[in-house]
Structures are given as structure tokens and as C-alpha cells.
Length: 468
Ligand code: ATP
Ligand code: MG
Image (cartoon, rainbow, N blue to C red; front, side, top):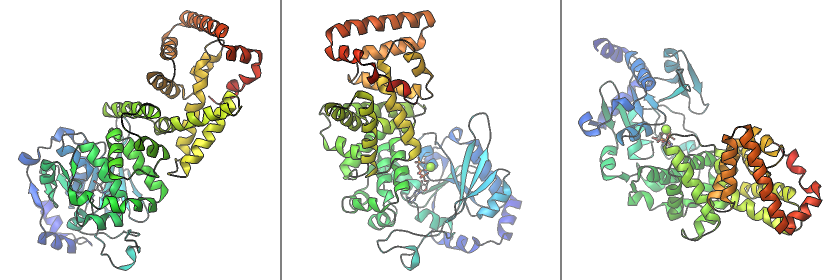
């Protein structure tokens, strides 16, 4: 303890001058009795990072969303650490530490354990920017922010009061600079500083407000929500990749349905995903395409809340499915045959979407695979089912098909058939295929459309050529 103190006194680094500033605006120290953070919810690796930094004489805290979640009694999905050590100083203390970012460097400290490696993100306290000078664009957006600062400044540049608390695992104390703990108790989400100015600096904060309100169930403070109606359109100035990341976070938050309602209430959804416009502009109880999306989102939320993984490609495939279906049916009505009509519709749907928020390529190929698998589920004879099962993305395609059965867009019997087929032994699979054949035969005797198609095997052949 004494060595720690002496080291702190002796250390001379650019942060020292800011330590003085800190004292003039002291944070509230919140004890364990009040914050009730359960140390069992802490990541051991995050604690290793704060301990190591503190033993080297620096200040170090768990910060941001992790403290918010801990105070809510939720195990955080990742841990960020804030310190007064510079990135170089941090890097020297850890074996697996990598400097990330050009504009403002942070350090990723990686720990390897039984499961996936854990990355603790360590950032140096950042300075506040004044509104003058070359950091701020004409519309108020921050362009450059790469200056280190004091802890007090670091707190002031964060977004919401509940995201600006610093937890020291060694003393189990929370440093609360902006009344975050009181807001937690009042279940209020409050922007630090002048909300309109903060939204202008970074319009993404409007989306964050909606996401956190959905996640925590907190209410936006009136002064925090008021400017959103007027400033909502600034979201379109945000670079597409960043906007995409934020929307993805929102959809993968485990509270996507609530968050999407929040976007609608705030009038923020227009132009983000054309499909969101569509679902959100129709009444919640109206039937149709929305059922599919609603079910898909509820399903995603449930999976995430129970700790299961969800692929973003799958999620976007569901969100755009009603559009795709419409285009697909339209193409068929215009005389195209089934499979080319589907592929043409996929191109159309993705192109229309890209006029709003561009979906990244890596997800696009997942979406295409999931979609193009759908007609293949109807072919339940010969080698078709075995080929389909071997597709690398079969599981996603199958889950997607089950969703279609659940909304009645596909016959529930089809989903049941596949569920049995996956579980069956070879003899069982033969029997299932035989039953499907009979079903097909019966249908054909009643269905002129299918009879016609049988005489022209060419219309079916593209199925075999489709990527798996
Ligand atoms: P989660 O990780 O659960 O989505 P989070 O609050 O940790 O939530 P991050 O994006 O990981 O969100 O950011 C970490 C912290 O950085 C936030 O808690 C907040 O203090 C700060 N922060 C992030 N984005 C912004 C922003 N756009 N404006 C101001 N502060 C921000
Ligand atoms: Mg986080």
C-alpha cells in the first residue's frame, strides 16, 4: 500500500497536472452498501488488469457499460478499463497487449482461458473538447478527439450518467461523477451536459439512448429525449459503417423489439432499414408481413437473453424476408420461373436495402445462402434432402424455415418432417422420404400446376446447382 502511494507521488507523466483538476470537482464515492455490486459478476481478467495497473502506480477502474450492468445486477458481456497510464505504459505491463486505433489509441489486453479468449479494452482518460478550434465541424460533429485528459474530463465526455461511473475492484468503491447512481435508482437515462449539443457532436448518441432505454427499462429524462425529435435527421450524417454497427448492436441487444418500438416512438427509424419503415408504419396489431419479423425478433431476443448465439446474417435475412417474398412473387407473376425469380428478387431486395443502411458484405452472403435454401426444403425425395443437410449453413436455413412454418407461411407439417428427418436413422429417413413421395403424389393428382412442372424437369434443375 505504502509503495503504491510513494510510486504514485513520484511518478511524473502527462496526467499529473490533471490529477489536480480532479480534486476541484470531486466525484461522489459510492460504497458497496449502496451500489451492491456483486464481485462474483466481475471478470477475473478485468480485475487482473486493474490490479496490475494499480500496482505499477497508476489509477485504474472498470468503467462504462460494465459498471452500469454490474449495478443492475447483470453480468456484463465485456469489460472496459480506464486508466491514467498512457497506451505505451499500459502495453509494457502485459504480455498480450496490442495497441489499437490511430486517432485515439487504446490497448487490447488478451487473456486465453478455457473458452474464447477475453479481450479487456484499456483506454487512457480522455480530455474534453472545447467547442472551438478544429476538432468540431460546422454542424457540431466531433472530427478529431485524441487528447488525453483527467478522469474528471473522461467522465464528462461520456454519454449518459449511468455510463460514467468508475468501479475500483480493490476497494469495491464506485466513483460517480454525474449522479449516475441516483439516476439508476430513479430508473432514468440522462445525458451528461447539454443534450442537444451532445447529440450534435455525435448523433449516434440518439440511437444509444433508445437502445439503453430498451435494455434497462429506464425512462429517458425529458431534457434528454426532447431534442431527438428535432435532431433525428442528423443520424444520416453518420458514416455508414458506424451506423451499421450501432443498428446491429440494437438488434442484437436482446431487447430488439422494445428498441424498435423506441425508434418508432422517437421518429428515428426512417431510412435506417427500409423494412423498419414498413413494419413500424403499420399498426402493431395488423396482420401480415410484420408477423414474420415480429416473431423473428422475439425469437432472437429470447436466444440472446438465454445466452445463445445469433448470426447477424440470419437476423437481416429475416428482416428483409417480407420484401424478398413480395419481389419473388412479383417475378413469378411476371412469368419468371421459381428459382431465377428468387435469385432476381434477392438482388433487388439487397439493392433496395443498400439505398438506406448498407448491410456489410460478410452478412450479405449468409443472407443469400439462407434465402436460396428455402425452396430446397420442399424437395424431400431422392438425394435432395441429404445434399441440403450437408450445406454448411443448413442449420440457419432450417431455423429460418421453422420460422416460416410458425407464421403459417409454410405448412407446419414441412417443419415437422425436417425435424424428424434430421433426428432419424437411415431406415427412418427412407420411410420419411417415402411418406413425402406419397404426399407429393397425392398433391400432384390435385394440382395442375405441379403436374405441368413435372413434365418440364428443366425448371427444377437450377436447385441442384445452387450453392449450399
Ligand atoms: P454495451 O457494451 O452494453 O453496448 P456500453 O455502455 O459499454 O454498452 P460501449 O459502446 O461499449 O457501450 O461504450 C463504452 C462506454 O464508452 C460507454 O459506457 C460510454 O461511457 C462511452 N461511450 C461509448 N460511446 C459513446 C458515445 N458515442 N458518446 C459518448 N460516450 C460514449
Ligand atoms: Mg461495452
